[in-house]
Length: 357
Ligand code: IPM
Ligand code: MN
Image 1 (tube, helix red, strand yellow):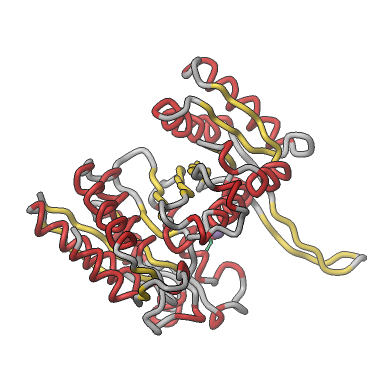
Image 2 (cartoon, helix red, strand yellow):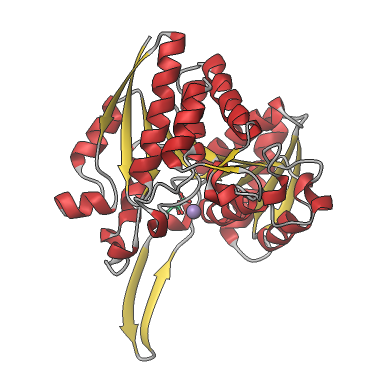
């Protein structure tokens, strides 16, 4: 089969990690006789530099014409002082919206052999961690009305969190479908003791699950308590569904407790099969261009694309096995380095995984 993949390298370490993922995809193509074609488009800071905007129309068109999209990361110090609408991050928010990708799945798992990388005590992580955060991606406060002004008290600014039943139901469906395939336990995170939008969220998730997935047990956890529980007892969680902002924050926390944010990938999907796949981590401008980044998260993002957009489960498994084999052979990038173990840079790690396909 032939697949057209749009690649949005982005900024910082983005180009290096995307190159690593492409190398692995080519190895998969060779082994399983698929043809992967890659077209690169600009997004984020590099797009601002080249075209004056973080999300040029050609990028949106290229993504909408592709079979699926691979993204590195956006942002960097250079563009930090630009006004809100002109920032690199706006490019990422914009492409998610333009592609209708309302569902963001962020699995935070502790890789076998990497337990030492977790900052938590061994007894808390010894049985493994696999928290799958289902984050609503195109609504809530990141897309709500906002503004700024000046009154008698001086300058002020405001943002709004708004959710409709329709938006909550469609993300609840994704989370319930996932939970149905796993533990049948779903945690829904909100701040219903304070926010009206959270009270609607909570009621809607329960009503939706009760009428469509009656065998799924839904448990509500307030977001502040959730932040605490993730470090206190992360093994208690399986599938977690939450709003855009809470999911953004909690997915970083969940990733960090696994100790390997450089190993974790995410998928963003809407109603069709075309998605956007990216590592959970950011553009790491401090190590950009030094061949130090961990390419594995992006390699695994590419693997998720094969499985979730193209239905290629065997190819997905082949990449996962190749990553595990590389780790088992004792190779680590700097972020997951342990004493007495072999150190690889971004290009070497990518080559090793590709060779293990
Ligand atoms: C993420 C990032 C983005 C987000 C930023 C860069 C807009 O933090 O993917 O988690 O907030 O969604
Ligand atoms: Mn984030």
